[in-house]
Image 1 (cartoon, rainbow, N blue to C red):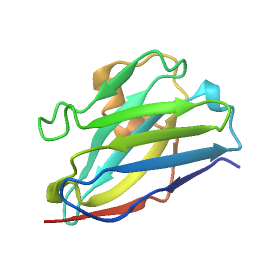
Image 2: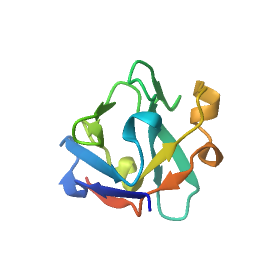
Image 3: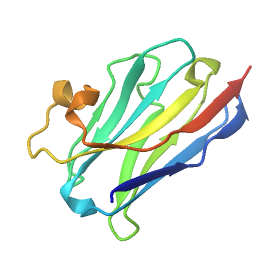
Image 4: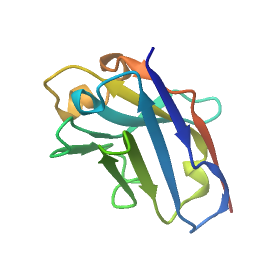
Length: 130
């Protein structure tokens, strides 16, 4: 049984940083591209970032509000993917979800669509106060 467990969320102030973690079990971690999505209250789930199986390629949302502030990375020894979030803003408030995708070929367009992922975590809440 595949499980993805997110952690690292919390309540922070604008300008602070957080590092989210997502640890996978029940799958060969290196066989999956790993992504982060987020869903703000009353809004649809949005793509944030993805890192490929090899870790050699990363994709990020085109949203100008995120660019340059978030960094995705992965640790194969720990079966964990990270999302480093800096200079947090109130509009970053959302539930952040980790996802694993088993397809072999990825592009920015493919990575941005949740339908291309096979497994999802339960999410971790990030709240940024102004």
